[in-house]
Length: 317
Image (cartoon, rainbow, N blue to C red; front, side, top):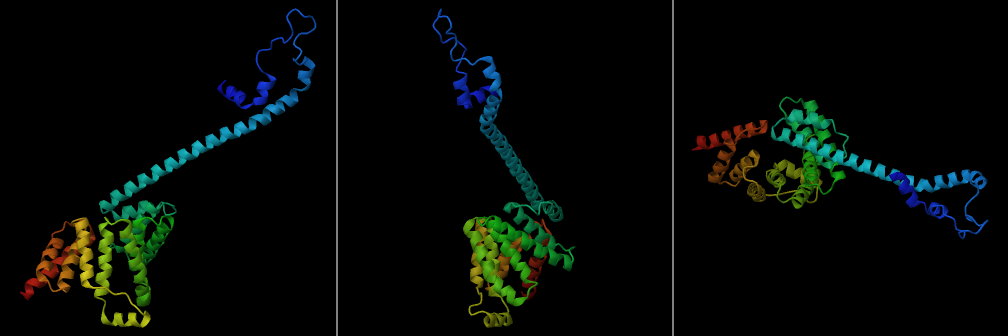
């Protein structure tokens, strides 16, 4: 009944043919003047086909509208379900990352490697890289994972150029690939890496890791060996360069944004102060790095390095 009522509302010709109750338009008591507008039975039967066709063609636009509404609602429901599904995957991924479950995280995310979601793709790039860093990963597997990570990061950036994390992981992955492509490519990529770290910081000034990584970039080019400096000058008119003071500024800035967020930032603060010949502050930060709770293999390695550097202090004293 509701559908019939809707048809009626959308069919103006029907209201004209069937304006209401079939009442006589003749004068009461006048003989031979009964219902002058009413069709005779034979006329109704003879025109039944045309009436049906008119009804059908008039109904089609409405049916099309109804169908559009149904499909639109279905599309919205599907899109909403898809969003919830992606959010659920991201929650699982972040939990595994925080728990240090690198291999499980990689296995989870590789199921969705064809995804178009930038948030999922940069996490997959990170998981691929972290898997490459595991001690049990062979050199051949590591190389494959490093290039795989770069591809995921590149896709993430293509999907969302406003994602600070996509910029950050794209820069990290380009840096890793440089280890397999020679000194010329590594130096050339340095400008691209710096550009994306700076963009990540611009998009999210509160992300301590992006700031820390910019510090590493500065530290790396502050301590670049003399022979690499010579090669860089031969290849580029203005090769990338930096200072330990610049690196120190970024490491401190990262620590201010998020204190004790990363053991390596503590270690590099200590090592940078060593480069600047400030042993007192170097010892302070190296001690913090040594005492940092080890959640990952990298944390354990950093604890060991910090302890060795501190032992070196004692031996010299």
